[in-house]
Image (cartoon, rainbow, N blue to C red):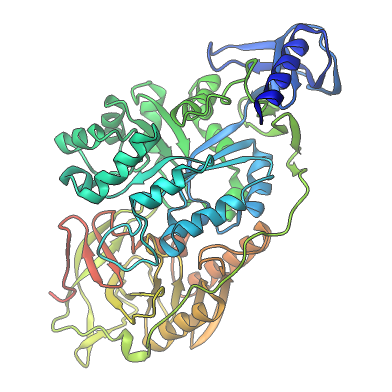
Length: 579
């Protein structure tokens, strides 16, 4: 908006507030949740040019009028940390399922697509995020590749960060996962942090398990948040250092219940809500940030206080001073809820326009604006690629922890045949493989994982494998695992379940091997079919493909699989499977 237009708009807003000119939209007969005072006030709201012009018991006029019938108006909700790619939906298909729940702003870390396509991938998402009935702001990915223990599709250095920070849609530096590099003063890490600091940009954190003086050193780098806390004490330690505790409740990692006691007694410091990694099924079934607010309030937290931490607190953290509160002079991002218990959104207003009503998204849908190019390039691969030689039945395995993305390193006795691992339905251990898929190098890492619970032969595979997004496959035998890899290669990425050499379920993800091109309902239907196929193999996990995707995440303790081998995150070294 040019200076002349901004001046004209501002002058009109003041006239509307004074009652000398009608506004565009009047919300009348309702109540307003005041996130500054904590009170709930009876008041009308008049909107002009997408901004709140006035609030109070005054006789305003407007071109359009909505009777609220005693309902309550809260600010548009903010998800403070989300990976759009983890929803499996492109932005035009994500908006219709989050906007009707009252979400008006997403703070997205495009780390996943950046690891596949670099800066171009981030810009691809930014270009697809306009005109959606919500704002999607992005953070510049800080760790591409995440660590040197795996091969990624791209490298994003300080110069790339500089380029992204010049884009107004980019607010700062995304989660700094390489916390060992921060503490050690790694030159490349320092250059990225210094670049963000020079721009006055926010720097987000990611430091699971970090404590003591190392945590102090991490905060000293100017890192202002963390969403990786799995215990209340861990979160409180960050809050005490002035870091924003982003309480995560996604489809894989669920930390809200653990944090609720500290939230209730107000000893967590600054906190907000985020989903981090959430799939379309979860959003369709349970809602978005409004669903988390429902649980926070049900636990005994004052409703307006809860709303404050889902709106004003994250808005301030990210420098979004134009939103986060229902007061004059703020952007008219508003949610009319039936009550402050269920947080069902009756009306959703974005920039002064009604974009959803009674669960229905009202924006005109647009065709996808994302060009699809197959990014899955596999090197030489055959059944022998999936042979794990073992000299002893005693093996080091990755132990899955339900509803967490951390894992444990364990020792197990497994079955051996012809000096190689062999599946035994009575032993909860299957082969896991990470296959480099960006440059067709043929690099493959093999290990064993416990927790999938397979009772019959088969395999599941994915091109979503945090953070470098190589192909990751868990299975009982080489033919099925090879069939998984070939099916993923054929469709340019996706989730697949195979048994008896036959594909039983397939969810194509052709955009960078991460995103579908279909609407949420179609993606959800195929995802449920993939989950059902995994369950038929005996898998008890609610989200087996989500769990699988995180087993490659070499920045989270304890044990992971990369295309270079089995990696011990705690010891920062590769591990030997045998013995």
